[in-house]
Length: 386
Image 1 (cartoon, one colour):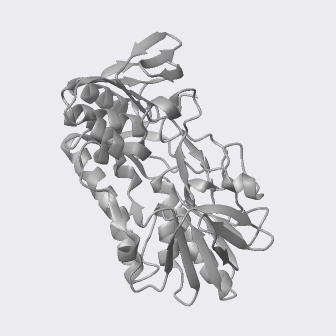
Image 2 (tube, one colour; image 1 turned 180 degrees about the horizontal axis):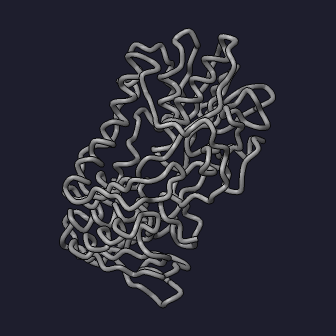
Image 3 (cartoon, one colour; image 1 turned 180 degrees about the vertical axis):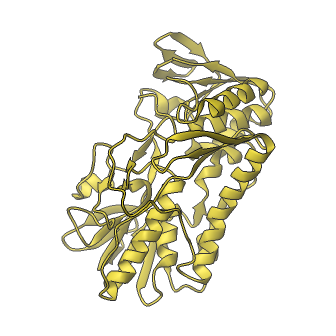
């Protein structure tokens, strides 16, 4: 079977490495490395690298790695087109292009840095001083604000949020986040809605907030290629999939990770995150393998277990959650929280390396079989202000 996977993030890489070696697998990615997206705030703060060469992760697997940008999908002809003019035909397509920071608010694209431009942000901050505002009260914004405040003490860091920071955590978790941000010198601007970003700062519903540098850590947005190609998508541009992760409109296409509106039993639509994306990618590979051998495809099962937030290099919060991602009153905080968060980040990479050596080794927490698909709205990992 000829399988083309577009996107080599957490979900795309897991799918590629877990597939049976009897398939002809082509992995197309815009760059030649797997980027640890959960460490982008560390990269902005001076970490040397958060990337691993795709050649290293796929060595000995027979996966054909192609570095190119996908520019078109012909779903009728079963063909992928890239920016260098090449065309790749498939029997099965895995759509794993993920998401990116939503920059649709006026001025963000022109005047703000995002996680995707972490290297440029690091260059701007190193050796300078001034006022820096991070926008976004979810885990991504909190991690960015804490990391930058700790690493660049010459900058006066503020965190701008539409609601209380870390709203998805328990009261204990929110309290620790607020105390730690204050300890690091981060000024909190809660209950503030950003209307636009200007060269000199933010325009908000509570007046102007001056800044020399703005970092935008709002919500994630799916790439437009799925909708433009004719895949059925939800209101956020994510491909709608059935319980086996097949596109509801094109059964020869599987969507995984942030690009998929997968249903988590008892919890609703999957949260855009590594926590959900990696199991989704693994399950899609299992379904493809089973289908190729004439076995029935199983429904996707997953349960949330915890949320992790680093607060610089020496502090963090591990929030235990119910199967539906709602918090319970148990947290691990401080240095222990930072240690657990680091272990989680390392585990994601270790899981990929183990899949390369022995496909099928990755395990994930699964929901009870009796749980049906819930409809509880999920909190954005990045704490969207909109």
